[in-house]
Amino acid sequence: VGIIGMVGEVSRPYFIHLTPFALLLSIGFLIINHEGKPGVKELIAFAAIYLFGYFIEVIGVNTGVIFGSYVYGTGLGPKLLATPLMIGINWLMLVYITAAFFQSFKLKPVVVVLLGSTTMLVYDLVLEQIAPVIDLWSWSGDTVPFQNYIAWWLVAALMHSLLASMRIRLANRAALPVYLAQFLFFVILLALM
Image (cartoon, rainbow, N blue to C red; front, side, top):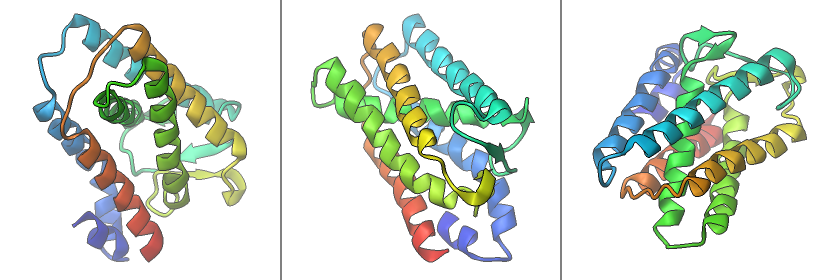
């Protein structure tokens, strides 16, 4: 439904405004499928990742120093300090699903950090190409700077390292399906638009 809505010229503006709702639906699906009850330690880690993700974007969009020079569109909903409040949710969701997926293989924490961060970077490589078209954000000069990809990987690695250092174990059978649904959504849009 999202692909059809985004591809249509008439329906796209309406579907762009539904993006935060779709993101919250994904989060809800993950919450329903989360194995076990999150304890205080997990909730602190999740809050820290949300806040770090949000404020790193606040600094990034207002200075251009971290990721490069970019501005947010309307696609991610309401903004504070020129930054959508949903961007922290997006960072948290991506860290959560990649960590849960790679932890399911009983890998060493450092391997989970490296693979999780790299998987998030692969996601961003595709997302950056379609983000301006669906009004998520746009880059100065319409070119994604290489520093964005380096910063994305480093921020993802820091977030994954936080989970590893706090010894947080995640198990969620929906992690891979949510990642693939999101990733393939952007790949298909990129191919069709």
